[in-house]
Every structure is written in structure tokens, then in C-alpha cells.
Length: 181
Image (cartoon, rainbow, N blue to C red; front, side, top):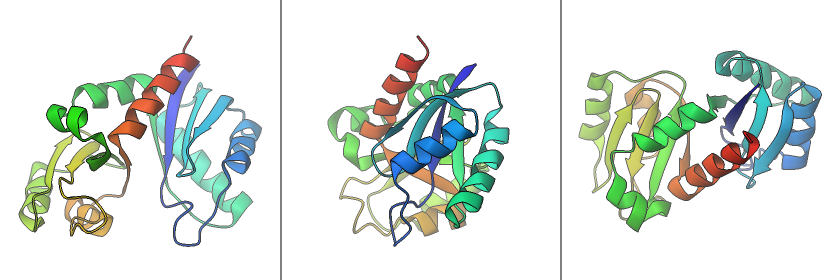
């Protein structure tokens, strides 16, 4: 069995609540092993012999059936997650200001032209880089007031995503490595 990391999109924001205890229960009922959640923003670590793509479909369907709302899951194996960490093009920001660096897991890899379109649309000091199905977003002046919103990112990259700040990214990696033992 492989260790997987799952990010849920847009839960516990905007009136869409999902208790992490309920999520853990659902994942266990689906046959996933050693299920753990991190924070209330929809992060899970578990073991499964299914592929990430199969898990995304399974989890999206089961969440709709059980909780009555559609949300997207972004699933990566622990090695894929660690590779995304290693590929971070913003190492100084990761060290000096990790809460303003986001890793966004994407459904599909954006094209280079789409990444350029996003970069051109940025109105402030934010920066962006993409590596495969991950985009790295730097918000030096903070995320809350930035014009580089999820809507802008997804519209320019022409794919859906769910982001986590660098502190959470590293925390998920540590939890996944612990599960692999």
C-alpha cells in the first residue's frame, strides 16, 4: 500500500462545513488505511493500493453521496508530494516567509502559455511558477488583499486547484513519512 496525501477544495469556507472526524470516518469506510487529517481545511493522509486518479474519483463521489455537496479532491502519493517540495523554485521564500508561499495541487498540468498568461495578469508583486501538476504562488504582501485569487489562477491556468501554505505542505510531508514506516 502506498501513502497518499489528499487535499479537499473549498471545505470549511463559505458555509460549506465538513468536520474532519466525519471525513476520517468516510475514508475509513471506503477501505483507506491509517487515515489522519491535518487542520480543518481538508487535508488527509492515508494508505491505499488505488491510484491517485482513482482515489480522486472515489472520494469526490463518496463525499457528494454522504455529505450532499460536490467538492474536488487532489490526491498525490507521498513521493509525488516530496518531489513537488523538492521542485519548489522559491526556496528563499520557503525559508523566510513560508506562510506567504502556496503550493497549489492542480487537476491537470498547465501549459507554458497558460502560466505566462497568469504571470501577465498579476497586478502586484506576486510571483508564480509551475512544475507539472503543481503551481507555486508567492504573495509577498499577503494573500488576503492580493488580486491573484483562486479564480484568477484557475481561469488563466484553465484547470482547478487547491492550495496550501508552505508550512502545511511540509507538515503533510512529515505526516506522510511517518505513515510510511
